[in-house]
Amino acid sequence: MKKYAILTIAILYICVAYTQQRTDFIVAKVGREVILFSDLAKQINQIRSARMWNEELTPETILIDMIENKLIILKARELNIRVDERRIRNQAESQINHIRAQFEDSREYFRELRNAGLTPTDLRNYYEEMLTEQFLRERLIQSEIRSKINITDSELFEYYTENIDQIPFKDKSYEIAMIYRTAQPSAETVRDARNRINQIRDRLHRGEEFARLAREFSECPSARQGGDLGYFTRGVMVPEFEEVAFSKSINEISEVVRTAFGLHLIMVTDRTADEVKASHILIMINETEEDIQNERQLNQTLVQRIRDGEPFEQIVAEYSQDEDSKAANGVIGILSKDEFPEWFIEEIDALTVSECTEPLEQGNMFYIFKKNNEFPPRQQEFEEVKDTIRNITTQNKQAELYETWMENLKREIFVQIHTDRIAFEE
Image (cartoon, rainbow, N blue to C red; front, side, top):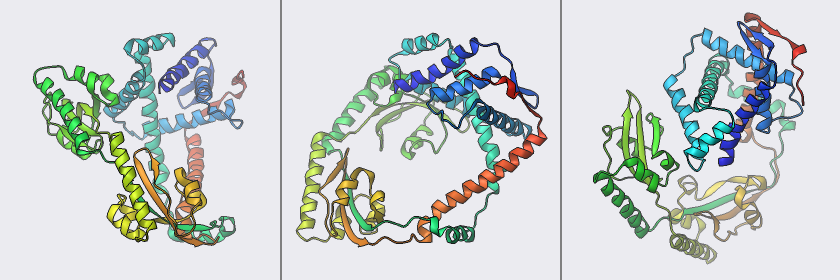
């Protein structure tokens, strides 16, 4: 993960270092704004540093994209599309905290910034500007293009019938059923976790600093920031966490809260009309190797019961923890080989009809698969490819609308390109 943080800073460093070696000049004008050669160089180096460069890209195509992006931003501001500045700041802060957390300590982080010739303000401004432009672009494209796309089922069916020869046949397929279970922490494992977090709570009540105990004991990545989760609105955190966070006074420490992530102690440090800023200490409830071994033995017993003649559907009803497939007697679909669950393609492919696999493991998850029936290759039905066709037709319509809208925008807002000035050294 630290590699990502260094790459992010390195991209900015490369852009600064490159542009410092050049005499800057205008390569394009968009309305009253200009695009400098240094802006183009920065964009090209970002793409190259992120290893996204390909043979179809040229300085000219990158410049056209930059012009279109600037047109969109200008239009968004003309239409008075506003950004939530607090949200932008919080998201930028979250990005920066994510990068900082990947360094051993603050000194290493600041040293990396200094080596890149950047200040914390440079990094914050970079993210705030990027996020603001992303927000404006998304809002405008949504209102001017996506909201105007309406595709009916009759259009989708027309595409299906007209292009049926191009729709691939479904390979030989099978009705696949599944029993799914996860290893659960034992009562003793839960009790140990509760003892640990209760000891931390007692120390907090005796006056020890929340942030220091979070750094020492919390098992969340936020521990490096003293448990600080930043500001969030309702609907961001899991319900159990939110219910407590939005009910507490500032600096009040909660009782122990259990969520799917583990056990939490929560302290609200600030609030606005619709947001709270909170810190937490997390003690995870991880299943032990003994818990996993117990689950492994249970799954082996289930396979033996199936092979001894008990109906697969009966075992599904009694033991499977996946509610969707459980409601269909364990059936997850009629699947060709390339649609089998990715982790277990070989094991499922090796089955004969009516046979089930041994228990298959992925982390703390356990699966037993069975082939119920076999179906020969066939033409895919409309309903099977309807979603795919909808995606294709939506993308096609969006591209057509975008092209028309952009041409109108270029006629509305002055654009001038100096193509003779954008020679770029490889």
